Length: 249
Image (cartoon, rainbow, N blue to C red; front, side, top):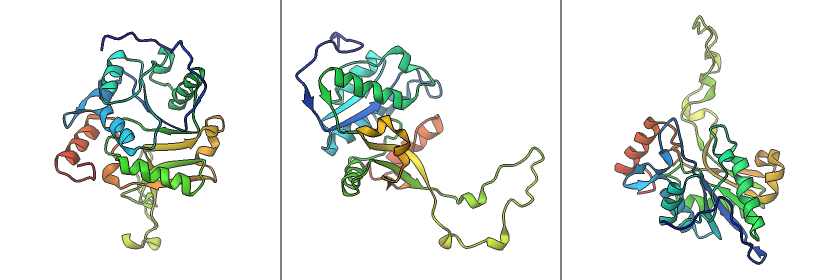
């Protein structure tokens, strides 16, 4: 701490080819759950879980935390992350697109002489994602010669039993009983869990490929798929850590 900070680095190194970059976006100023990215979960800052999982996966040449906060940056460095530059103030707004942040990081590294083949976005709000999850997603990426791999988990309830309700709250036709089947026979459905987005650098210029024909799902269990946005999510993650109901402990 106490070292000089720059909003963007100013010195170029010799052009250097680096294959795998992990980006952990951690802006300050969260309104839903104040300072959630550095909130202590089980005695560890929330961003610490993603940083350590990325480093311990041993697949990244650089694990970069993108933040607008010097305080957040200092904490990230304590866990071993690269925070060689801060993001711009414009990219720290509430409605900022995360992929714009990713492009900024990639372009800034390029201006410093470091280029990457593969980018992995690891959101700090998914602290129960493990280093083995990251390794397994990377293995799938290579085996499939993928353009992208995105993590998902199975949903607890079939969308067959989900419909919007009108103002009158009438449930006419809400469930088609003639098509009712037992749970074991129902088709499985999956949702994005926000834990891992792994992609080839070219996808950043063609985002339709993120969920294209060469995109594949890495399936995670529901108890490692907690995405912290509210205090209820945070308490649930604490519960899973405390009682050992997931693979992180």
